[in-house]
Structures are given as C-alpha cells and as structure tokens.
Image (cartoon, rainbow, N blue to C red; front, side):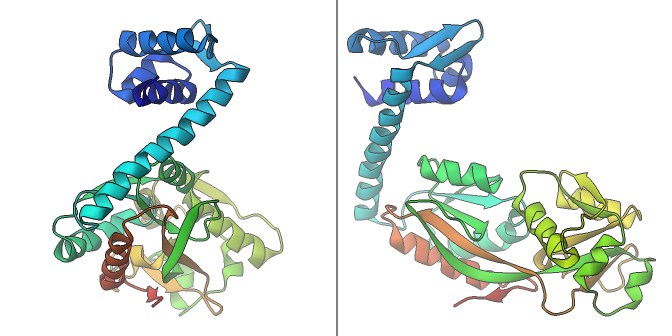
Amino acid sequence: MTLTELRYIVALAHESHFGRAAEKCHVAQPTLSVAVKKLEDSLGIALFERNSGDVRPTTIGAQVVAQAERVLSEAARVTEIAAAGRDPLAGPLRLGVIYTIGPWLLPALVPRLKQRAPKMPLIIAEGYTDVLVEKLKNFELDVLVLALPVNEPGIVAQAVYDEPFRLLLPVAHPWVKQKALSTTRLLEEPLLMLGPGNCFRDQVLDLCARASHGQSPQVLESSSLETIRHMVASGVGVTVMPASSVDTLAKNDPLLRVRPFTEPTPTRRVGLVWRASFPRHQAIDVMRAALLDCQLPGTKPIR
C-alpha cells in the first residue's frame, strides 16, 4: 500500500468517476483503475461499487477512504514541517481568497507581500467560502482571506480589518439627494445581489431580515459584483457593496453614486484563516502585516 494508491481512492470517492479522478490526480485513467484494483486485491475487499458511469464507495470502502484521508493529511504535515524548518518564508504559499475580496485586495497585496518575503511566491485561488475551507482542510491551500466567522475544528482565524457596507445607486436615483440611508430602505427598491453560495449574499440577506423584521426584499440575482455594478448603472435596481469595491468611485462618476448607511453601519469582519497545525507561523505574520499595509478604502484595521 502506497500514499499514491491512497490518493487515488480518495480522489475516486470524491469524484465518483474514474476519468475525473484520474484527471484530478494527473494520471491516465487505466493507471488509476489498475492501482485501485491492486489495492482492493491486496486488502481482500471491494472498496467501490462500480455501475455504468458511476462509482461509489462500499460501506467498508467509505471507512477506508476516511482513514486514507487522515493518513494523507499527516503525510502532508511531514513536508510542511520540513519546509518550515528550512525557512518559513521560502517556497510557495497557497492563498485562497473569496470572490468579494480578491479583485480589490490582490492587486495591493501581491507587491507588498513580495517586498516582505521575496522568496515566498503566492499561488492564488479564488472561490466560495465553503469550497476554500474544504481545500484548506484537505491541505490544498495554506491560508485563506475570508469574511469571519469561520467555525471549523482544527482551523484558526485571526481578524485583520472591518469593512463597512455601502449602497450603490444609479446617478439619477432620488436617494442620491440623501447623505446616508437606513437599511430599512432596501425593501423599497429591486435589490441586486449575488447568487446562492456566496457569503456576501448571505450577509446582505441577513442585513435585510434584521432591518425588516423578516420581510424579504425584491431580489434580482447576478453572478459577479462587477456585473451588478453595470446593472445598477443601467437603472435596474440598487445594491449593497463592500466599501473597498466602491469607495474609489469618482464623486462625479457619470453613472453611479455611493452612499453610506446610517449608524449603526453594517460591516463585515475580514480575517486570515489557517490550519492550527500549519507550521509556518512567520509566513502568517508576514501575510497579516502585508494585509494591514494595503489599507483598502473604507476599511478599519484591527491591530
């Protein structure tokens, strides 16, 4: 039994398909199929039920896969510990960032981190919170930048900054005449927001629920904040945006206007998230310092 064989059965259990599992492991499908059959023969049990186009772990196979995941996690720790022993600021750092932070944070973060740790290149992945956390737990990423809280066993979170929400309006909208608006006004207009699975959407819906005592807003969905900005500019509706994405908007922008909310201002807390077992503590410290250096528009650092 080898670590490679264990990686194969874990990938197969996750993908439920030999072809996709082979692609994930960067090997040919026959290579993976033969290795899985060899492992089953050596153990004397069937690990998977094979049907047309679908592969599922048997009851005992699911237990073996779970143990294989634990073994692979511990094996990855050996590599991490060795790397940290040599130089925690040398070698790639795999960073995950959620979609509603990345476009505005990364252009500022990358050069600042390079200046502080020139031998530690970033490997960047953007995604949804749940997907990134799963990759962190599976040792596919080292550290995340997320909206907090994140409550997972074995995961550490450290707050970096607070970011207020803003209201983005079409330039001709009557609310533009007001200096600030209450969150209760969100129920009065079509509200553009991201689709399900995005944590910022959940935060905005929670904001609406608290402001309206459970009444739902009229929601129009889109797949990205940039698309939503264009839809607001065309007069389709209004939207809530993180301050870093709109506070640089020119005051004389021909299409859009930004307005703050009245107190108490709704905010999100953004922080670093990593495995408690991650040994490169100095890399985390440097990442946090670089994040604070970015001073994104509208944000308030937590020192």
